[in-house]
Image (cartoon, rainbow, N blue to C red; front, side):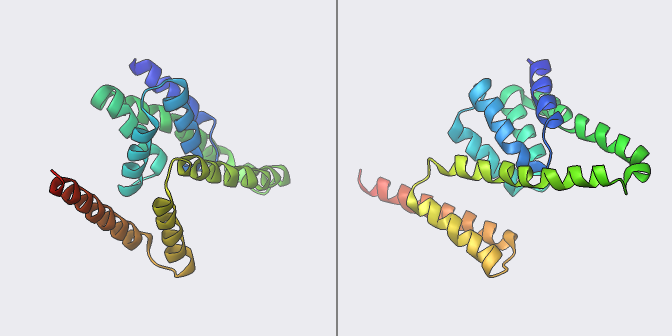
Length: 180
Protein backbone atom coordinates (compact mmCIF):
# COMPACT_ATOMS: atom_id res chain seq x y z
CA UNK A 1 0.00 0.00 0.00
CA UNK A 2 2.85 2.41 0.81
CA UNK A 3 4.37 1.79 -2.61
CA UNK A 4 0.99 2.49 -4.22
CA UNK A 5 0.68 5.78 -2.29
CA UNK A 6 4.23 6.72 -3.29
CA UNK A 7 3.65 5.82 -6.95
CA UNK A 8 0.36 7.69 -7.12
CA UNK A 9 1.84 10.88 -5.74
CA UNK A 10 5.02 10.44 -7.81
CA UNK A 11 2.84 10.41 -10.92
CA UNK A 12 1.01 13.52 -9.73
CA UNK A 13 4.28 15.31 -8.95
CA UNK A 14 5.85 14.30 -12.26
CA UNK A 15 3.03 15.43 -14.52
CA UNK A 16 1.96 18.70 -12.93
CA UNK A 17 3.28 22.09 -13.94
CA UNK A 18 2.33 25.33 -12.25
CA UNK A 19 2.66 24.74 -8.54
CA UNK A 20 0.43 23.54 -5.76
CA UNK A 21 -2.97 24.64 -6.99
CA UNK A 22 -2.36 23.01 -10.36
CA UNK A 23 -1.88 19.66 -8.54
CA UNK A 24 -5.25 19.75 -6.79
CA UNK A 25 -7.34 18.38 -9.69
CA UNK A 26 -4.86 15.55 -10.22
CA UNK A 27 -4.81 14.70 -6.51
CA UNK A 28 -8.60 14.87 -6.45
CA UNK A 29 -8.94 12.55 -9.44
CA UNK A 30 -6.41 10.07 -8.06
CA UNK A 31 -7.53 9.83 -4.43
CA UNK A 32 -11.30 10.17 -4.95
CA UNK A 33 -12.20 8.92 -8.42
CA UNK A 34 -9.45 6.43 -9.23
CA UNK A 35 -8.39 4.98 -5.86
CA UNK A 36 -11.43 5.82 -3.67
CA UNK A 37 -9.13 6.46 -0.73
CA UNK A 38 -11.25 9.35 0.57
CA UNK A 39 -14.77 10.65 -0.01
CA UNK A 40 -15.27 13.96 -1.82
CA UNK A 41 -16.53 15.72 1.32
CA UNK A 42 -13.57 14.46 3.35
CA UNK A 43 -11.22 15.61 0.58
CA UNK A 44 -12.73 19.09 0.84
CA UNK A 45 -12.03 19.03 4.58
CA UNK A 46 -8.44 17.87 3.99
CA UNK A 47 -8.02 20.57 1.34
CA UNK A 48 -9.31 23.21 3.75
CA UNK A 49 -6.91 21.98 6.41
CA UNK A 50 -4.04 21.95 3.89
CA UNK A 51 -4.82 25.54 2.96
CA UNK A 52 -4.85 26.68 6.57
CA UNK A 53 -1.39 25.43 7.58
CA UNK A 54 1.92 26.85 6.36
CA UNK A 55 3.45 25.37 3.25
CA UNK A 56 2.45 24.56 -0.30
CA UNK A 57 -1.13 23.32 -0.56
CA UNK A 58 -0.19 20.36 -2.75
CA UNK A 59 2.38 19.06 -0.27
CA UNK A 60 0.07 19.63 2.67
CA UNK A 61 -2.77 17.85 0.87
CA UNK A 62 -0.49 14.93 -0.02
CA UNK A 63 0.64 14.63 3.60
CA UNK A 64 -2.92 14.77 4.97
CA UNK A 65 -4.23 12.24 2.43
CA UNK A 66 -1.27 9.92 3.03
CA UNK A 67 -1.76 10.21 6.78
CA UNK A 68 -5.47 9.52 6.41
CA UNK A 69 -4.75 6.35 4.43
CA UNK A 70 -1.75 4.83 6.27
CA UNK A 71 -0.74 7.10 9.13
CA UNK A 72 2.74 8.58 9.43
CA UNK A 73 4.27 6.19 6.89
CA UNK A 74 1.55 7.01 4.39
CA UNK A 75 2.20 10.72 4.90
CA UNK A 76 5.93 10.17 4.31
CA UNK A 77 5.28 8.10 1.17
CA UNK A 78 2.90 10.70 -0.27
CA UNK A 79 5.29 13.54 0.55
CA UNK A 80 8.29 11.75 -0.97
CA UNK A 81 6.33 10.90 -4.11
CA UNK A 82 5.16 14.49 -4.50
CA UNK A 83 8.52 16.21 -4.03
CA UNK A 84 10.88 13.77 -5.75
CA UNK A 85 10.01 14.80 -9.35
CA UNK A 86 10.19 18.52 -8.58
CA UNK A 87 13.44 18.12 -6.67
CA UNK A 88 14.99 16.15 -9.52
CA UNK A 89 13.82 18.62 -12.18
CA UNK A 90 14.99 21.65 -10.18
CA UNK A 91 18.35 20.01 -9.57
CA UNK A 92 18.78 19.36 -13.31
CA UNK A 93 17.62 22.86 -14.20
CA UNK A 94 20.06 24.37 -11.69
CA UNK A 95 22.88 22.42 -13.31
CA UNK A 96 21.99 23.42 -16.88
CA UNK A 97 19.85 26.58 -16.59
CA UNK A 98 22.67 29.03 -17.21
CA UNK A 99 23.11 27.50 -20.66
CA UNK A 100 19.42 27.62 -21.68
CA UNK A 101 18.11 30.66 -19.80
CA UNK A 102 18.16 32.95 -22.85
CA UNK A 103 17.00 30.26 -25.29
CA UNK A 104 13.92 31.51 -27.19
CA UNK A 105 12.45 27.99 -27.42
CA UNK A 106 12.59 27.56 -23.64
CA UNK A 107 11.06 31.02 -23.15
CA UNK A 108 8.29 30.22 -25.65
CA UNK A 109 7.55 26.91 -23.91
CA UNK A 110 7.10 28.66 -20.56
CA UNK A 111 4.84 31.30 -22.13
CA UNK A 112 2.80 28.54 -23.77
CA UNK A 113 2.31 26.73 -20.45
CA UNK A 114 0.83 29.76 -18.66
CA UNK A 115 -2.76 29.43 -19.99
CA UNK A 116 -2.79 25.71 -19.16
CA UNK A 117 -1.63 26.47 -15.61
CA UNK A 118 -4.43 29.01 -15.18
CA UNK A 119 -6.95 26.41 -16.38
CA UNK A 120 -5.54 23.85 -13.93
CA UNK A 121 -6.05 26.34 -11.10
CA UNK A 122 -9.59 27.37 -12.13
CA UNK A 123 -10.70 23.76 -12.68
CA UNK A 124 -10.67 22.69 -9.01
CA UNK A 125 -12.41 25.88 -7.96
CA UNK A 126 -15.35 25.04 -10.22
CA UNK A 127 -15.27 21.36 -9.30
CA UNK A 128 -15.14 21.95 -5.54
CA UNK A 129 -17.90 24.57 -5.63
CA UNK A 130 -20.46 22.23 -7.23
CA UNK A 131 -21.81 20.80 -3.98
CA UNK A 132 -21.99 24.12 -2.16
CA UNK A 133 -25.13 26.01 -1.25
CA UNK A 134 -25.65 29.71 -1.86
CA UNK A 135 -24.44 30.87 1.60
CA UNK A 136 -21.12 29.13 1.01
CA UNK A 137 -20.84 30.63 -2.47
CA UNK A 138 -21.60 34.06 -0.95
CA UNK A 139 -18.72 33.57 1.50
CA UNK A 140 -16.45 32.69 -1.43
CA UNK A 141 -17.49 35.84 -3.29
CA UNK A 142 -17.06 38.00 -0.17
CA UNK A 143 -13.61 36.54 0.54
CA UNK A 144 -12.51 37.10 -3.07
CA UNK A 145 -13.79 40.68 -2.96
CA UNK A 146 -12.02 41.33 0.35
CA UNK A 147 -8.70 39.92 -0.89
CA UNK A 148 -8.60 41.16 -4.49
CA UNK A 149 -10.97 44.10 -4.42
CA UNK A 150 -10.14 45.62 -1.04
CA UNK A 151 -6.57 44.35 -0.70
CA UNK A 152 -7.13 42.62 2.65
CA UNK A 153 -4.63 40.06 3.83
CA UNK A 154 -5.72 36.47 3.13
CA UNK A 155 -4.67 35.62 6.69
CA UNK A 156 -7.30 37.95 8.14
CA UNK A 157 -9.93 36.69 5.70
CA UNK A 158 -9.16 33.05 6.62
CA UNK A 159 -9.25 33.88 10.34
CA UNK A 160 -12.59 35.68 9.95
CA UNK A 161 -14.02 32.81 7.89
CA UNK A 162 -12.87 30.27 10.49
CA UNK A 163 -14.43 32.32 13.29
CA UNK A 164 -17.67 32.67 11.32
CA UNK A 165 -17.72 28.91 10.65
CA UNK A 166 -17.24 28.13 14.33
CA UNK A 167 -19.97 30.59 15.31
CA UNK A 168 -22.31 29.13 12.68
CA UNK A 169 -21.76 25.55 13.84
CA UNK A 170 -22.22 26.53 17.50
CA UNK A 171 -25.48 28.31 16.63
CA UNK A 172 -26.72 25.27 14.69
CA UNK A 173 -25.76 22.94 17.55
CA UNK A 174 -27.48 25.20 20.06
CA UNK A 175 -30.61 25.32 17.93
CA UNK A 176 -30.64 21.51 17.59
CA UNK A 177 -30.05 21.12 21.32
CA UNK A 178 -33.00 23.40 22.10
CA UNK A 179 -35.40 21.23 20.07
CA UNK A 180 -34.97 18.13 22.19
